[in-house]
Length: 390
Image 1 (cartoon, helix red, strand yellow):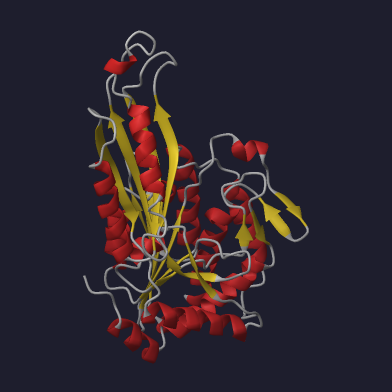
Image 2 (cartoon, rainbow, N blue to C red; image 1 turned 45 degrees about the vertical axis):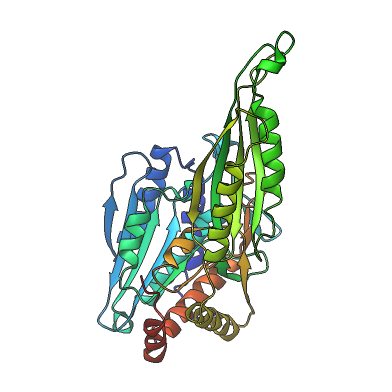
């Protein structure tokens, strides 16, 4: 373990207990703002410059920056919001059992925010080793970061490498690739009539939708790594009425842009197809997160993270996952790795979401060692040469 201040674990646990006691679902602006204010205060206490970005609809975002006299610019990122409804923190208070700490949002991702922040403090003790380290806290990742994405992109411009502090996998592995994520809706407009008196005069939107659902499900495996999942179905008003409207929600995932384009084209073709005369189909939605691809630069970062862990006496690997995160968008601008937070699991389940207590200091130390490796002159040269081009 590297030399961290003796009180680090106690300080992290105190912050973590306070932050996870606040209800901060994405639509709870007051709650997200309360957690953001705590994060900003902690960053200022560590000697970082902090800017608040007021957001009218969602919680406010923050940028914390440590400025140095050396070379190299790093960006850290994490989100302040959770998926939980107001009141969950009271019904699911902090508890510790068998080396695990349970609390809503502790893995996704209060533990990660504090891991990155305390690692930043430890590394910034010597400001001759970097030009800048920026930590961007956004407020609506669980909704796809619709308002904060321009802010994160602006902060990523000119950065050499980015690290996102979503939780590590339960194995301790980090994330080097993520699938693109899309959310579509296919809606059918028909014509309603009495189901007993004149069913032949109706245009049954539900039956039309049933044919299209079969078509949609057949898109799984359209290209390697593509999944297409028909999910939420809505339609009809009463049992004795021929339904004049119906819709299906569609979750789409793809490992690369070729897969994204193939899915989009296939869904448009399915929408243009009708089985029930008079039915009109409409497609809406799209891919909100692009694919995070394991490029040579990302592979280099993952290798350095594995080396950092090994130097500290443990092992990690890097993996691909089907889930999306802010790393997906950042990776289009700057080489990015994810899963840098503490080891945890069961995110989005208030009863069982946890982090491994021992992993908190471990992941802080790993980040500190990795920062140094990423900012080495030879590594900076390789990262800059491989920077994504717009």
